[in-house]
Image (tube, rainbow, N blue to C red):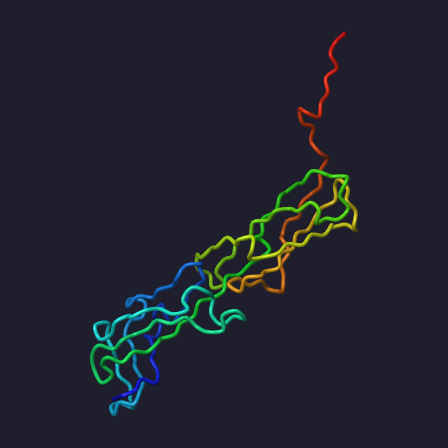
Length: 212
């Protein structure tokens, strides 16, 4: 029988544009794929044959969650197509597509505005400042994903010298550990810094002398 050697989706279709990583399985529909061109060993038109949406069915999806072509996931995502009509009837072929990494930028790393001074500390990392990191689409789509704590590691540095002092600020830098996300460099520093402020007085810190 005829053998399929390649398959192309309609130019400009959703699947040819690719998708963003979302954390969920990406499952392109026939609407996303449109008309398919099958390439193979059929004797007509150089082995090319056009398939409308009624001429094929989607059987399954492969490798369709994580970002494509990264260190941890070198392959592309795929949708397994079965041909229903024509020279390649009953043949299956995996049509590949891309899932893009989301981008982490300095402006999307949120850190506390202030932290209370602790005189027992010497290094900035002892303050263990939390961060919220949101990754967004590199292609301008509306996709947004908040990173889990396991997706990054944080490091800290005083902005001025190495002094733990009221008024000094702490810079928080994130190193991205999950290949579904990328930064411009190996790591990215939060746009805002955290200011060390004098500890606010609390009720249990205030001692009232009873009147005699």
